[in-house]
Image (cartoon, rainbow, N blue to C red):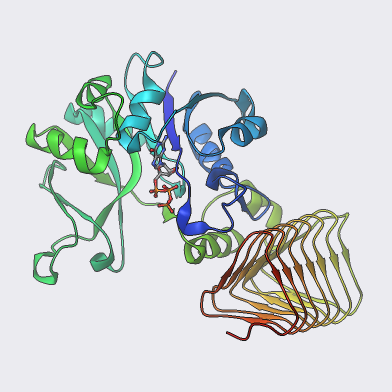
Length: 370
Ligand code: GTP
């Protein structure tokens, strides 16, 4: 049975305050946790078991997924202290694997042919094989330089423009032989990217393969919002995409959308949500379960978390409102601003330019115009 060790131990600091109470793998992406999409991907390619290498808020993750998910066995290993990406894979894999396995960063979204990656790995006799993905702007990433046969010859971290001769980056999914674990010193933090892969390059046994498909690293509010757009626009195959269907619109039968509200696809309105008259939802909007959108609000290119409440005439553009937040009348939330879960904004506040309001914070009426 093919096993995937999935790293889910990080604190998700770049996504605070959304990750203050919720580990990143459980952050909702449209209507289900981010990690569910990785499970969907793995199940599609016959992975039978996932071992989650946990650290931050592990009990929530285990309580959510339990012992199996979508036909896949799910096991949990919880680190006492962060062991890094290689340490986390070793800790998750120890005693559980007896052959080729997968190592995965649990916070990326991807759709690529894992079977083709395994075939390539075996044909090359590799010790480890990286799934690679091309990027439009190679100056922003660490790059992977390949020989003509797919062998990794170098990692280019922060390359100077004249050094850039590739646009391929590590997509955070690896085929690994158990011997890789011997290269990871136990009991201290070890990075697979910085400490382990360079040693396998020296042995000439690290390979990389770029496959067509989708890839996005969900690490920041900007990329988290982008992930929502991509699922809503069906840029990758997902169960949510099937719910959205050909008209790119899902309104749960238990949601109540007033006559005189406008819903512009793509949009997803989840169970029990309420949208009052004169509101405009979309395009590219998610109204999560039980959220309430007041009259004359505009929610465009934005996500309103479960149970959150928007008063009258609130404007939310390209922004995220966390679970259970309460936003007063006439507030404006724009430009990658984030309202933390449980936060309360008095009326007339304006948040923009990436402002983040912490979890459970209260803001008096008209106190912020940024
Ligand atoms: P930031 O704090 O925002 O950088 O997020 P992060 O640490 O959650 O993510 P990062 O991109 O640094 O890590 C990539 C993946 O590895 C994520 O899925 C993390 O959950 C996971 N990860 C990072 N460090 C560890 C670790 O020490 N142990 C384990 N088990 N997983 C880790």
